[in-house]
Image (cartoon, rainbow, N blue to C red; front, side, top):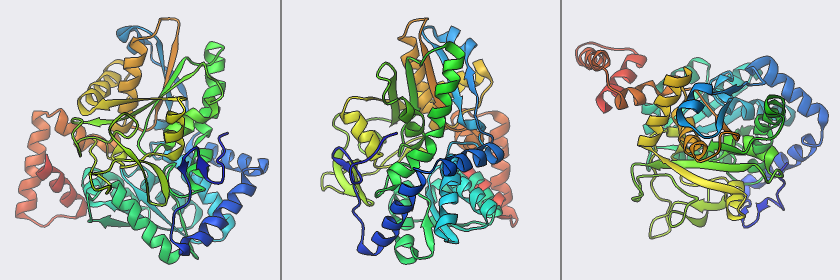
Length: 428
């Protein structure tokens, strides 16, 4: 497993935080250091994921899709089949067990696509913790179904209306909350970013993905895969599937970022390719950030709410800089094409985040030979994306439904879910 050097991965990482947060971070680092050496704790964690969230997730061959595309045989690591519909639950269950050992009763989290917020709310309900979730106001509109379930699970969802009203601002607000409440509260950071030890801690719990995959692919084909692709927002699902393969140099690791609408500033979320991002320090750590000419954090875009983050995991930045990780990107249009292909050829509905990994994986597989094998980490399922996908693929019945929601909102009081549907209609 990957280990930092005093919280650093090459030139990236570290702990750049207000002094008030240092005791909580040092407490967390000390606890994590003990638990990661405790085989009984790992076994407790694995049993919880098996009994509660449905691990191990399957490794699914895509025979029809592979034949259609030509090239390598394509496999999917099915994180979409986790309880809550994404890989995020792996991390929160591990951090939940850690919180119980810290003796704290409240957790906070940031979320973009809502999957981490939903997973945190589920974990808090399961383990008897109070939960507060910070989410950008624009992301709430895009992903209201997750917000609805978070609230039903007992979590408080706080809309963040500053700045671009997306994931960066939600993380800023969560850090402010933690600075004021760290004695009683644990911050369940959702991705492999933030101040040390969070990048390592999140990677540790998400590595269950790659550990399973190693055994499954060995059983299926008798050897390691030739390549693995994963989408890269902050980086937790990518680090989860990549980490156990870092020493296998024959396995190509491909991280796929959000290419968005164009390469213009504010139209994408590409951090790892030339002339897009610069090294900086923000939100407690040092990594590659999209920045404007004044050195301020820039604006981002992705069709997938979970990938429009302004920075990237310091571990991924280091792996890319060292040449171990290959970076690619997929445009919104390519993502929608990949989304449709998987549905039509394999009957699987992917999340838009995961569809970036599909787009990059399909391109890579087509350039490989028929005797090679490529695994795509399908990090989530597409239930939450129905409104965004419906905008991209309009149907007459859907257009009529949206108009009815608008009319109903204009003529009679509606409950919260109806208001959300009408708001979605206005943005369609």
